[in-house]
Image 1: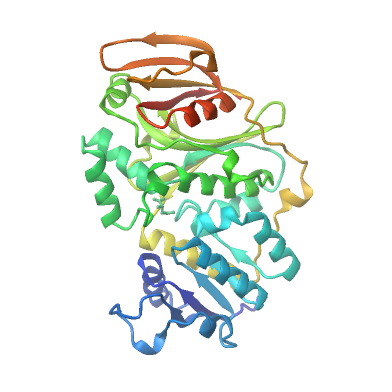
Image 2: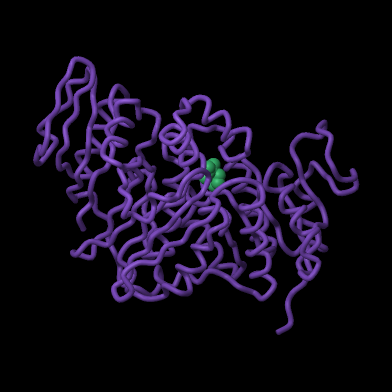
Length: 396
Ligand code: HSE
């Protein structure tokens, strides 16, 4: 099969952009060339000659020598303008910007359909793990029951450091930043927003469901304290930030990002450090488990390379489940079992459907109980700090 030659206009030359440049240098068999790079800061010194760089986006978007725009910038609003401009100009796009994609998902899907120009974003979800194309192609049927996993490298790195190596949250976060794992605003990572954007994208490819991301509850890891870690380690458990999209017996879909106690029988138990892990459950094959580095320059750039290669043979997402599959509905009306540790707050006990265990001491108290996702949203809206929530069990 004849493959298209890829002529790249690259936006952003940070951690991932430079990684892509390096990887392309080492894959001479793949016909792809970076024609021009657009950056924001004209003062920075760069490892490539000035002739590569421009500071005007139109030098890329209107350049007839460029057929693919690779968007690897941080600013989601600027990224959206670039992506829409490129698609409208008939240029295929590769992006790693999960926030931008998630926040404009419906519009971007419709635009691709209308213009018949592809936008690929494997690098936006789970770094080096090829999950989106697997969901699109291999799981191209109604048999998928759930997809659950660690989708944020920074928080997994921090939790591993805190639990296994007894390092403080602040030091672990600083190390994740130094290694290029964290978002430029690390709140996105540690409060679970980054994981939520990824889960939102996963849901579209897994179940054909695009909902308002604001509906998806995201609880981060900032409130986890030493008491929680002691509770986990005494029971041989680890705490992981896990994203869940599960089809219930009623065929409705639940989605949440929440810290979770995982035991050694769970595949995610062994996924430590910057690694991500995804477990899919299928009606006839029980489970599949995907693992790989979820953040950092080369893992992310490798996923970009794979998208570029896919474009060279005209691959595009068809969103088959969205357009052909049964219409799944999202629900937050489902009971989950959580551990809620609190110090001072007077939380509303009646939000729980059932209290299974209660512990009180001078400083740390906790309850284990069953609560609906909807009531958990309410609890979190009422109280911003002074407690932690960790998932114990979801029973679909
Ligand atoms: N900050 C993200 C993470 C980068 O830690 O997973 C990769 O998407």
